Length: 141
Figure 1 (cartoon, rainbow, N blue to C red):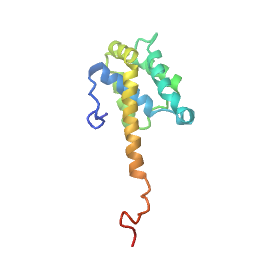
Figure 2: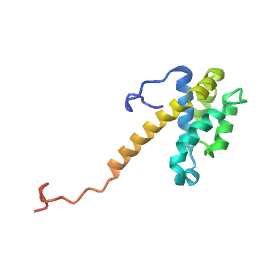
Figure 3: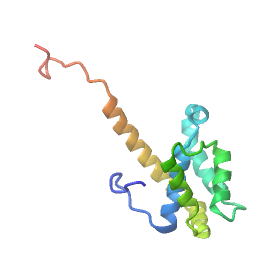
Figure 4: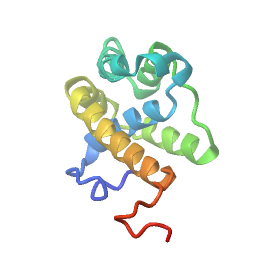
């Protein structure tokens, strides 16, 4: 689960917590062979798809199926993620979660984007090649 404090985001609770984590799972399964060349469009498409998948849907399993097909989302990559997704879909409060997914899709996607941007920045910092020392930084000699 997401640690909201780490990302300096107000915590989500109840149906909003479930809705956001479903969006998070969709993002984790994003097919970057499809979206990699259209990253600028990806976030708008995710928000739109989260909302549109709620229409004509009575339960979270149907919503997930619609969203997965529309966004070309891969199934969860491991047992832990599969169990978490199954738990989220089986919360039993489908009506409230679907209402949140419809009305707060932009918020849930924004949370995911903040988290993704922060993780990307952290990854780049960890994997960045050290710059050659300059004379001002003490140099090699």
